Image 1 (cartoon, one colour):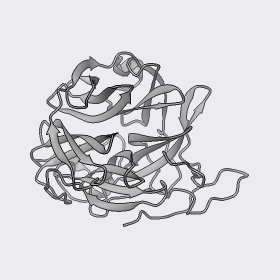
Image 2 (spheres, helix red, strand yellow; image 1 turned 180 degrees about the vertical axis):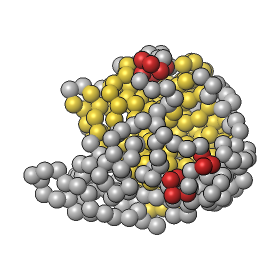
Image 3 (cartoon, helix red, strand yellow; image 1 turned 45 degrees about the horizontal axis):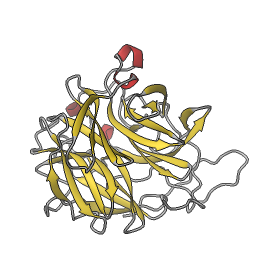
Image 4 (cartoon, one colour; image 1 turned 90 degrees about the horizontal axis):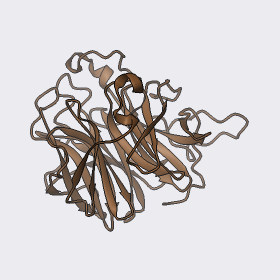
Length: 341
């Protein structure tokens, strides 16, 4: 299945981009339950494609929307044309739209000819949230990006019940960032081999400052990346995307939020949620999901209607203006001359 194509708004005084040049809005929605969310984008050097792995919520069901969920996958050679690849198989168990277990929010990093996934796992599908979970580490050859995933271990993070792992490599060191429940905040861990991890506790700086200082309380889905000689962390406080900046990816300084105000693109008329970023040369593209029919403040999960729970994957380009990370989701993205990683 290829994502739908629509015309995007154009930059003033510039020629219109054709659908062949610019990603569609929305970028993609899951073909079974219309619940694609929590995108994680990674370049697969073997297939020479971009792959997005996502949580496939069962949005159009009345109950058990957030559990019993597989990890879905779509791929693209150019960030414009996307093909649905199916659901990930773990340890040779085929992925399908309805699972007896629960998988959430994959974090993925390439290492040599392999892909490593750190994904939240729950051994049941009891609504609404399935109880406590753990982050599991799976690995596959880049030649088997859908059905080759094998369990490596359960990392020594602050387990149980962490979610939303994000992976970063700095020199010979790997870092994982994730959220821990019950006031644990955004934490991090370090490793030299992706297998043995040393928890480092809460990330220093503004990211774990008091809610009054940050301007919001709860946040999840930390995503860390390097761009323009700085490290950036995006988080999801359910009020747009929070932005933090760092010189060393350890201590974080808060910057203004992005993607809180609705866009004008199709199904992009709601605050951005749970991001991932692809850096290609000097350019950076943020991937996120929207729930355009979801009201805020939000009713409890099992009181939301299926219509309110539908979600879509979206894409926008990041900018750096006077040292601040910004994003105008309504500007069409010209990818005609984009170089490959």
